[in-house]
Image 1 (cartoon, helix red, strand yellow):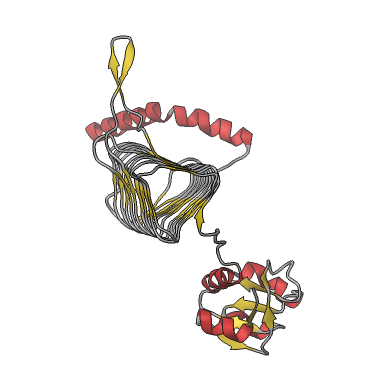
Image 2 (cartoon, rainbow, N blue to C red):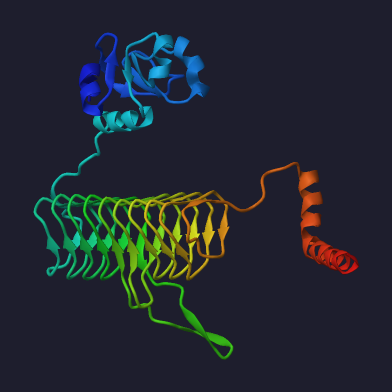
Length: 339
């Protein structure tokens, strides 16, 4: 699709500076060509202003004097860019109807405007809402409910009794409603504990490829409205995540932990079981969360990168911290007794 720059200004709430032009694509400011629009929001990229070949740029007002091409001036160039990207590259829509190569149970309910691709399996009692797309090879098990205008990519599994809201995007390889990891020691072996809860996904949720969300042991696993989950995240049984929380790749959240709304959780974070994390918490990448966070703010752990030589020295010292702490305590006690 193509848009006049003036139209993009109106659609994004930006201010047009310079001549109107036709925009066909979005591109990096360093590699953009005629017909492209790029954005600059950081001074780190300001050097590209003088050499860019883009037809237009999205910039903050502070860069306007140095901008050699027409510009959309915005307080938030990245947001304006995202809106333009959605206009230029709208989501692909599948052809309405049920493929002859899909397997659909007689007792399934599928809206006539939905799309069911080849190889998909829709089980008895499942419900597929208006405008929803089910990708090739995906399995919607018994009594699962999918809302309207949700896009489920190829090879997704939605377990029995689970619910997915409207306007969601579920990427390939996602599994919703696998059994939670529940076992109890029985002599020398382990007895499996039935997982009788479900998974409930809110509206406008996006779930990245190969992410898994386990069904609850007793209570449901609940993902709130507007939550965005990256690829390869593990969410265990009985977890709840509040509205508009964003979680990066490879994070693992153990069972029955409750995470608030508006949180930002970095990649490779580990969160142990039965914790409470309040609203508007930032957890930086590779942090290990071992206790509840009851006050909003930013939290970090792990050690920063260093040369291998220094890291080994500091690692050895770290193992002596307990001994050193005890020595300091003894010295302080001795000093107090001699005062």
